Amino acid sequence: MEGLEVGGLGLTGDAQAFELGDHVHVEDDGADGGDGLEDEELLQGYTCVFKSVREIWYDVTVKHARWFYGGSNFPLLQLYWPDRNGKFPWDPKCQPEVRALQPMLHVADIEASGAAWLLP
Image 1 (spheres, rainbow, N blue to C red):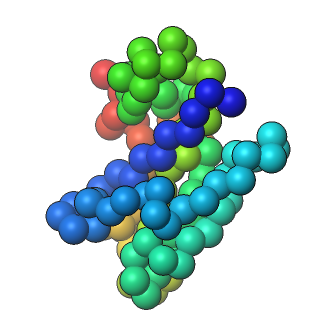
Image 2: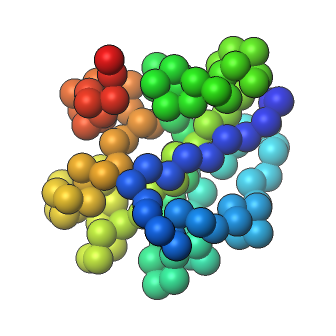
C-alpha cells in the first residue's frame, strides 16, 4: 500500500477543517485498510464510519490523488456521518437531506450509490 486517502463529502465550515491524523489511526494489517472503522471523536456526539471507496469512483472524486500515485493503486476511504437520529446514508430511515450530501461511494452500482450526479 502506497498511501491512504480519506474523503468526506458534504461537510462544511469547522466540521471540514479537522486534522484527521490527530483522530484516526488506521492499522495497516494488509486486510481491509480501515473499511468499516468507526470513530467517535471526529464529530462530537456522533459516531462516524469509514468505508472503502470503489475504484469506479476514483476518477471523478480523487483525480489529483490518482495523478500523484500514478494510478488507482491506493486505498481510499470515505468518511460518513449520521443524521441527528444516528442513521447513516445506507439506512432507509436516514434523513433524505443527509443522504443527498453523502453519495455512497462504497457501492459500485451507480443508481444504488446515489452518486450518478458525480459522473460527467
